[in-house]
Amino acid sequence: MTKIAGRRWVVTGAAGNIGSALRAALHDRQVTLVSTDIRAVDPVGPHDCVAQTDLADLDALVELFAGADGVIHLGGISDEADFHDLAEVNIVGTYHVLEAARRAGVARVVSASSNRLTGLYGSGDHITPEMPPRPDGFYGVSKVAGEALCRLYADKFGISTVSLRIGSYEDRPGSAREQRTWLSPADAVRAFIAAMTTTQHTAVFYAVSANTGGWWDLAEGTAIGYVPQDDAAAWGDREHIDPDVPQGGVYATPAYSTDRMRR
Ligand code: NAI
Image (cartoon, rainbow, N blue to C red; front, side, top):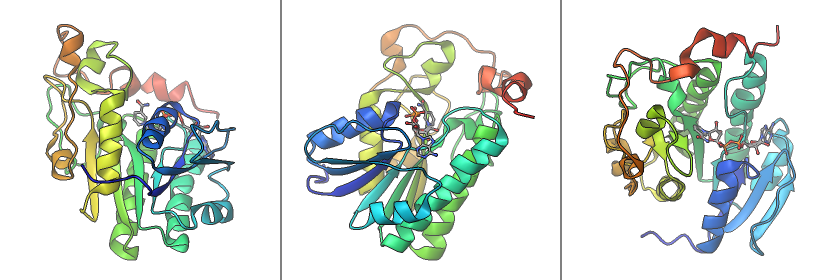
């Protein structure tokens, strides 16, 4: 396994679900962390430097990123919301992270994308990252923009960028959908470490466990060294989902978006 001890990695969205667990795992592997969030962040240990920062503040991000080897960008709105908020926090926020990385001379940015970017494909479809996006809502649209920004910074500015289309990050799969989309906490750590250490300049892959009957192609993840070890099948028999039902399930319904519009 690639040695990561002694590296200096910034984590945005550090106070969130994935950020909190991932930081603890990286700290155990002797990564020096700079953990930031708009909320207060509890340090996970003596090698965790915490800072409260809004993704809207580009100058503060540039300062924070100085001397870092890489950035793991998890911060933002993590579900459907009013489009104006998603545009501001997820799209402009991701632009600020990438631009701050460019100004601070950071070599790699790994950004949390989402399976919801392809949630309007049918449950009978097998999806690869090369297929056109079919977002299941405005949140998914914000992640399409995030992936495009990552690709731009890789192609135009030479920063290595990896977008992880995260499945359903849960301790255990809790629904028929999650039997296909589950990402275990241990596999999440494997996915982020692979993304942060791959020799590939840029990549997009589904960060999902090796679920029996899963919807998404794992080859792009394997190519960068992500080998998931968990399978939702260990938690029980797979329930049937009609092949015509959108992969996004309830997230793909019109009401899931209109209910969250401010105006
Ligand atoms: P979370 O909602 O628990 O954490 C997101 C963090 O971002 C929060 O701590 C929040 O305070 C912070 N944040 C929000 N606005 C901010 C701003 N303006 N400036 C700075 N920080 C801000 O989300 P979670 O579950 O940890 O997900 C992390 C990332 O992974 C998100 O980008 C999410 O969209 C993505 N993702 C998560 C999935 C999951 O199953 N949890 C599935 C697919 C994608």
